[in-house]
Image (cartoon, rainbow, N blue to C red):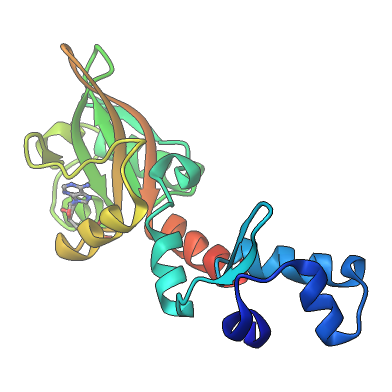
Length: 196
Ligand code: ADP
């Protein structure tokens, strides 16, 4: 990088000469530095230094991660199922948030762990209360779409203090739930970015 910084644009061959290496030996290293964004290569001109810092490159990479690359499969329940059944679904599916849909499979609400706990500490009969009574309902649902940037979704999770949001597809019928993004998905993206 120092050689390119001082002499760029410079061909791979000239860099190799300065290091007493063959062009072939150097090729993988140059490829990595170019892919990482520290150097840029122009055909017949050579390598030059981009001047971008590690942080700048990290920010650029972060702006290229979309919801569709990290979304998980959503777990949905019908609005008329009982609180009892919703609790069973949450355990069986091993998720922390359920999305509630109406008979035409459109999003009408969200059920979190605490929503179900709150309903459970009352004296009600859980098998007879439908989830639509206790859920957070439309239009107060925070949603996202496949093409949204993951960083924007992460900000929504923080701003609204929630654990998950549905990935939806809008139609004239409403919002179809096609995925979910949780704090776990964001953590996975964070780790992948660190390992790149
Ligand atoms: P927990 O209940 O485990 O704290 P959350 O922080 O996700 O889980 O939920 C807090 C509250 O916000 C609950 O009442 C829940 O119904 C609601 N909520 C969760 N996700 C969303 C969302 N995407 N849009 C709107 N409200 C939500």
